[in-house]
Image 1: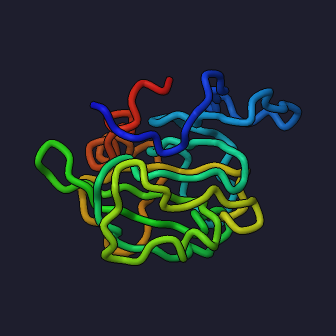
Image 2 (image 1 turned 180 degrees about the vertical axis):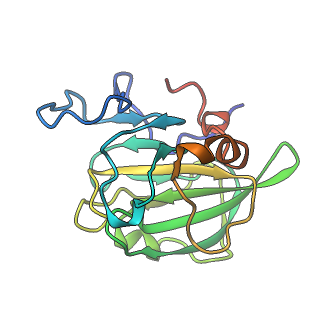
Length: 189
C-alpha cells in the first residue's frame, strides 16, 4: 500500500528490542527509533495504570525529536481528541477514523504535544500526509521519552483511548482487534 509516513523517518534509525527489559545504561545512537508491535516488555510499565500484569505492546512506537511533525497516513476524519492524564498514559491524543479494505478502522496517535490539540477539530477531514500533530515532550506526553504511539483498531473506541498494552493472556484477542500497524506504515522493521 502506498500511504504517507506518520513520522518521516530518515534512512537510518534504531529498532528497539524491549523483550528483555530496559537497559538503563543504554543511550540510543539515533534520534529516530521504532518500538515494535506484539512485544512483551518486562519491567517497562511500572505505572499504576498498568496494574494487573499489562506489559504486552499492541501498537508501534515512532521515536522522534520533540516537535517533530506527525502526519495522517491517509484521508480520514478526526474522531476524537483530548488528554489522557494518568501517569504513563498517552497524554495528548488524537484518534482518526479511516477506511481500510472497505471497512472502518481507527488510528490512535498518542504522546503528542499539548498544542497538537489545537491543530485539528473533531469532525475535520484530514488528508493523506497532512500534519495533524507534533511529538510531545516527556513532561506533557504521559512521562515517556518523545515518541508517537500509533495503534489501529477495527472496533470503534468508546472514548479517546485504546489499551496500548495488554496482559499476555489477552494477547490473541488484542491482536485480532488491534492489527499490526505495518499494514499502513509499511515494512519499517
